[in-house]
Image (cartoon, rainbow, N blue to C red):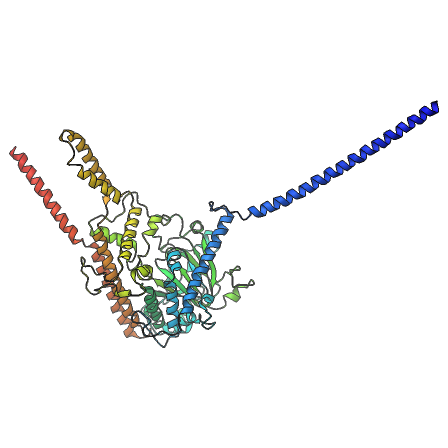
Length: 628
């Protein structure tokens, strides 16, 4: 019995152990399954997360300028825009022939068989002038680097950009020997180099003549000595060297704007060739020999009070590192022979011949500075002069207001900071030359748009074949710019119509409401004092007629005469002739200033009539009061 019970107990124990083993086994399987589930779920979630991250990595916050993806997007858009304008330039160059027929140029073409760069340079200037993208997206907006490779087309030689290097060489500069031409060398403050930071921003002052005695003739040794450790430059060199005068004539013909060329020569390994500064001219930099590093920034966000934003970094002024950073670095590249760079007016820029830009697209490997800057750098600065000849909206505003009897001085509350759209717009070049586009018939009629270029009558309509649409847009843009600059001063067309309505309501006022009418009249007077009406349409048109039909043709003609007389820098008679012709240019600007100070004849007559009416009313009231 006991044996049966023991055997039974043993069987129960075995059964229990077997059951527990099964439970442990199933529990272990459960744990393993659970672990595998969690593990696989984790991997799946990670994969999903990676896929989500990859999908969202391309989503850019385009509303935040500080975000990296926004900046990348902007850089890509700018790169696409650069490619677009370069393609337009190349397309035009490909469509032009290597020779010009006598009927191709719109008027006198300054052809000269002596210069091989005549036709390719003219075609290049035309390619820029005819580019809508350049005119609307780059002029006075952004710099543009045009590498020599962009000047090469499939229909021309691979060395078609060599015309840039043929314009002017060091051999041409040596013809200065024995002449009275004198250049300047950068100051010792610049030649000492830089230590980084704000010390890198040197003051461009104390520049001195390359000769100890400006009255004696120049020797080539003077140039060589002045080049030691720094830059030598020659302003208005196009009035001394015939090839530069020739390139100016071609550029003026293509762009329809006055031009000028300066020369800059810098030896290798100069840390600061020219410190950060701004210029009044829009310029095309043409690298003819050696290499030079260029940095171009956007205009500083906050203008410096009392300092011309188009003449910064000169005469003791310094553009600080903080100001440069606020404008952002737009160009940082080494120009090599054949390259061209457009720099807008008012954009700070600096140069050196010692810094290697590693991330240049045409540099496959990092090179030593002695390899890149092994030769003396020579570049030409072709200035498209608008400000110096009064071809800006600022000059037209001055003339329109002065001639209509209104004070041209900026009223309290008007600001003049380059970061503000209104004050930047007022310095823009007016739509003349290639900036006028096809609406003004620039590509067809050119200087034939005005009927009488030699004799100007203020009230006569001389616009001839110039399209009315162009004139109306010109006047409308000038009005908008004037109002934006002093929005608190001028009454718009809507307020003008309200004034006319209030005047009509005067007769409807009941005699019993004389007090109400006096209140309305008082408010109208206060409103009139606060808001002035803009000059009339005829007053705007009178100034524009003078600029288009008298002033600009006179300036271009005077420059054509001057440049056509440049022969040999060592010819003393040429120097005397240049002085005489320079006086003619001065006379043109004196006539320009005199026109701006004249009163519009109709305004003078109206003012006299109003003055007589006031005097008659005064004496009538005086006599009436005396009799009573």
